[in-house]
Image (cartoon, rainbow, N blue to C red; front, side, top):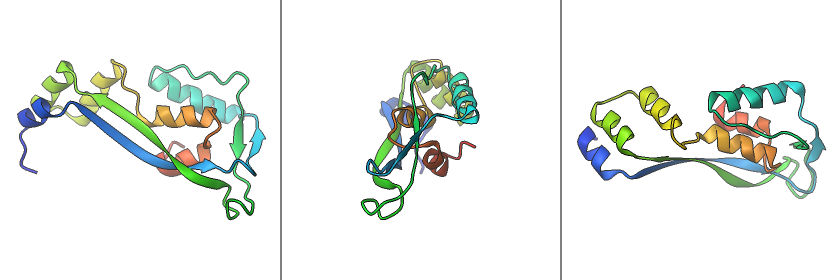
Length: 140
Protein backbone atom coordinates (compact mmCIF):
# COMPACT_ATOMS: atom_id res chain seq x y z
CA UNK A 1 0.00 0.00 0.00
CA UNK A 2 3.03 2.25 0.10
CA UNK A 3 2.77 3.19 3.79
CA UNK A 4 5.96 3.07 5.81
CA UNK A 5 6.25 0.99 8.97
CA UNK A 6 6.92 4.18 10.93
CA UNK A 7 3.69 5.77 9.66
CA UNK A 8 1.72 2.67 10.56
CA UNK A 9 3.19 2.41 14.05
CA UNK A 10 2.70 6.10 14.82
CA UNK A 11 -0.86 6.30 13.44
CA UNK A 12 -2.61 3.09 14.46
CA UNK A 13 -3.78 2.88 18.06
CA UNK A 14 -5.91 -0.26 18.08
CA UNK A 15 -6.59 -3.10 15.69
CA UNK A 16 -9.83 -5.08 15.77
CA UNK A 17 -10.48 -8.31 13.94
CA UNK A 18 -13.81 -10.11 13.79
CA UNK A 19 -15.50 -13.14 12.31
CA UNK A 20 -19.20 -13.87 12.31
CA UNK A 21 -20.32 -17.26 13.59
CA UNK A 22 -23.80 -18.69 13.56
CA UNK A 23 -25.69 -18.73 16.86
CA UNK A 24 -27.38 -21.93 17.92
CA UNK A 25 -31.15 -21.98 17.50
CA UNK A 26 -32.67 -21.65 20.97
CA UNK A 27 -35.74 -23.66 19.96
CA UNK A 28 -33.99 -26.88 18.91
CA UNK A 29 -30.38 -26.93 20.19
CA UNK A 30 -29.71 -30.20 22.00
CA UNK A 31 -27.86 -29.85 25.29
CA UNK A 32 -25.09 -32.33 26.09
CA UNK A 33 -21.91 -32.61 28.13
CA UNK A 34 -18.57 -31.82 26.55
CA UNK A 35 -16.80 -34.96 25.34
CA UNK A 36 -13.37 -35.77 26.73
CA UNK A 37 -11.89 -34.91 23.32
CA UNK A 38 -13.57 -31.50 23.36
CA UNK A 39 -12.35 -30.82 26.90
CA UNK A 40 -8.79 -31.72 25.92
CA UNK A 41 -8.99 -29.44 22.86
CA UNK A 42 -10.37 -26.51 24.88
CA UNK A 43 -7.71 -26.97 27.58
CA UNK A 44 -4.94 -27.15 24.94
CA UNK A 45 -6.16 -23.89 23.45
CA UNK A 46 -6.24 -22.36 26.94
CA UNK A 47 -2.67 -23.46 27.60
CA UNK A 48 -1.49 -22.11 24.25
CA UNK A 49 -2.88 -18.66 25.05
CA UNK A 50 -2.41 -18.71 28.83
CA UNK A 51 -6.15 -18.69 29.52
CA UNK A 52 -7.99 -20.87 32.03
CA UNK A 53 -11.39 -21.97 30.71
CA UNK A 54 -13.86 -23.13 33.36
CA UNK A 55 -15.85 -26.10 32.05
CA UNK A 56 -17.22 -27.04 35.47
CA UNK A 57 -20.99 -27.40 35.21
CA UNK A 58 -20.97 -26.21 31.60
CA UNK A 59 -22.62 -27.86 28.64
CA UNK A 60 -22.37 -27.62 24.89
CA UNK A 61 -25.12 -27.92 22.32
CA UNK A 62 -25.62 -29.76 19.06
CA UNK A 63 -27.39 -28.03 16.19
CA UNK A 64 -30.51 -30.08 15.42
CA UNK A 65 -32.80 -28.12 13.11
CA UNK A 66 -36.44 -27.10 13.29
CA UNK A 67 -38.98 -24.97 11.46
CA UNK A 68 -37.82 -21.83 13.30
CA UNK A 69 -34.22 -22.10 11.95
CA UNK A 70 -35.12 -23.60 8.57
CA UNK A 71 -33.69 -26.95 9.70
CA UNK A 72 -30.16 -25.58 9.97
CA UNK A 73 -29.82 -25.68 13.76
CA UNK A 74 -28.62 -22.07 13.76
CA UNK A 75 -30.44 -18.76 13.93
CA UNK A 76 -28.76 -15.34 13.57
CA UNK A 77 -25.05 -14.59 13.90
CA UNK A 78 -22.71 -13.14 16.48
CA UNK A 79 -19.23 -11.69 16.21
CA UNK A 80 -16.11 -13.13 17.75
CA UNK A 81 -13.41 -10.53 18.24
CA UNK A 82 -9.77 -9.91 18.97
CA UNK A 83 -8.48 -6.49 19.94
CA UNK A 84 -4.83 -5.48 19.81
CA UNK A 85 -3.82 -2.21 21.47
CA UNK A 86 -0.67 -0.87 19.86
CA UNK A 87 1.58 -0.21 22.84
CA UNK A 88 5.20 0.96 22.64
CA UNK A 89 6.63 -2.56 22.53
CA UNK A 90 4.43 -3.42 19.54
CA UNK A 91 5.25 -0.08 17.85
CA UNK A 92 8.96 -0.87 18.05
CA UNK A 93 8.42 -4.25 16.44
CA UNK A 94 6.39 -2.71 13.62
CA UNK A 95 9.09 -0.12 12.93
CA UNK A 96 11.73 -2.88 12.94
CA UNK A 97 9.65 -4.78 10.33
CA UNK A 98 9.16 -7.75 12.67
CA UNK A 99 7.18 -10.73 11.46
CA UNK A 100 3.54 -11.19 12.40
CA UNK A 101 4.61 -14.13 14.56
CA UNK A 102 6.99 -11.93 16.56
CA UNK A 103 4.32 -9.24 16.97
CA UNK A 104 1.71 -11.81 18.02
CA UNK A 105 4.07 -13.40 20.57
CA UNK A 106 4.78 -10.00 22.09
CA UNK A 107 1.06 -9.15 22.16
CA UNK A 108 0.28 -12.39 23.97
CA UNK A 109 2.51 -11.18 26.83
CA UNK A 110 -0.05 -8.41 27.45
CA UNK A 111 -3.85 -8.69 27.65
CA UNK A 112 -4.33 -9.55 23.96
CA UNK A 113 -6.62 -12.53 23.37
CA UNK A 114 -7.01 -13.97 19.85
CA UNK A 115 -10.28 -14.72 18.04
CA UNK A 116 -10.12 -18.32 19.14
CA UNK A 117 -10.26 -17.40 22.84
CA UNK A 118 -13.39 -15.29 22.35
CA UNK A 119 -14.89 -18.08 20.26
CA UNK A 120 -14.23 -20.72 22.93
CA UNK A 121 -15.85 -18.44 25.53
CA UNK A 122 -18.95 -18.23 23.31
CA UNK A 123 -18.97 -22.03 23.02
CA UNK A 124 -18.74 -22.40 26.80
CA UNK A 125 -21.57 -19.85 27.17
CA UNK A 126 -23.75 -21.95 24.84
CA UNK A 127 -24.03 -19.31 22.13
CA UNK A 128 -22.39 -21.40 19.41
CA UNK A 129 -20.61 -24.74 19.24
CA UNK A 130 -17.18 -26.10 18.37
CA UNK A 131 -18.38 -27.32 14.98
CA UNK A 132 -19.34 -23.79 13.96
CA UNK A 133 -16.15 -22.33 15.44
CA UNK A 134 -14.11 -24.87 13.50
CA UNK A 135 -15.98 -23.93 10.32
CA UNK A 136 -14.77 -20.33 10.70
CA UNK A 137 -11.36 -20.72 12.34
CA UNK A 138 -10.26 -24.31 11.56
CA UNK A 139 -9.38 -25.51 15.07
CA UNK A 140 -9.35 -29.28 14.54
